[in-house]
Structures are given as structure tokens and as C-alpha cells.
Amino acid sequence: MSHDSDAPNPVWTDREIVLEYFPSTHEHLVPKPLRFHLNDVGDGRTDVLTHDGERLGQLSPVEPHGNPTGELCCDLCQRTGTRRFLGLFRFAADDGARQRVRYITACRDRTACEDRRISDVSLDRLLRGLL
Image (cartoon, rainbow, N blue to C red):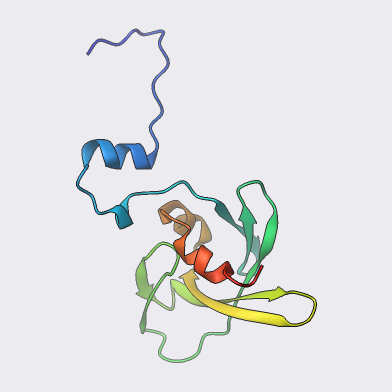
């Protein structure tokens, strides 16, 4: 295949690369277009935003208890590690009549976690029935 030096280089998404070079990859492992974005706002808190930037709520860290060397699995990116790298986060939604709370295990390094996250499945589960 010849390349014209003035032609723009094509931009491939993670999903296109996986499907092109690894077509037998299980559907669960193929990156999907993300509808939500997580944004670190400081003090360990993370805003849950729609793709358009609408804030749906906030994840707040929960004080760690128990064995600090115990292994956890991130519900968002599926990384496994100790409590040094992962923690429990609380998501609260208030519908006016009552406040409902859900919990999620997630990486403390929000940027790296967001780079590894390939789907919104866990966020769909977290938000289901709350909004």
C-alpha cells in the first residue's frame, strides 16, 4: 500500500483496532463508545458526567477499613489490586423525597482508570433507578 505524503493519516479508534486485528475477541472485551465520562474534582471525589457534560452525580471516597493488602477489582476498568490502588466510592442521588445511595469499587488513579475503561456497563448499573 502506498502512502501520499500529503494525505492525512487515518485515525483508528480502540474498537476499530480490536475488530480489525483481533476479530474473534469476545464481545465483552471489545471497547464500546462511552456515553459517560468521569472527571476527578479533587479530594478523591469524581463527577459522573454525560458525554455532553451534564453532571449526573458524584462519587465520594469511603474511609478504608479492613485488610489493606486485600485484593479488590475495579468495577469500571476491571483492574485488580490492593486498597492502595483501589477504593470504595459512594454515589448518592436525591429525588426530592429521599436520598438513595449505591457503592462502587474503583481505581484511585482516575485518569488511568478512565483510559482503561472500555464500556459503560458498570455505570449503567450504578445509575439504574437512581436518576
